[in-house]
Image (cartoon, rainbow, N blue to C red):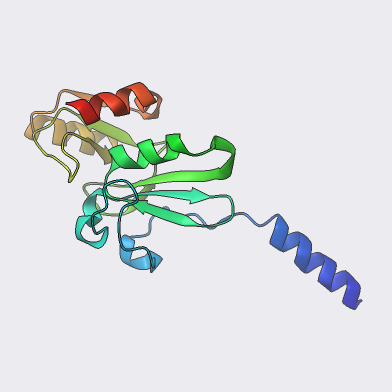
Length: 154
């Protein structure tokens, strides 16, 4: 019986899925990380802009903006990444980057300059686009290396 329990524990540990961050806020994560690995700025000072890369081993890396979150995720092996999350600009809650709506070309800038502003709801993205002179709303398909590099050059 004891061997069975050890085997069960081991299998559960090896095949455990990382816990989803969706719906949480930065404060809920209690990260020990202090600065963005790309921009080298304090992540706690940029809570509305944070993105997160969660690896298969459960490690979560916070980044100072959506642009840098995608840049960082593109620098890592796709098979090592469990999920990429960003912070909804309206609610401050963490959302799945795959289902977000991104406003491009607004007058609002992140710590890294020109960036994309993420929202969980298209209506919120549309409202923000109109109020902040945005150019277009994109989905995850647009978040390619070329597009992220373009944002960095603007």
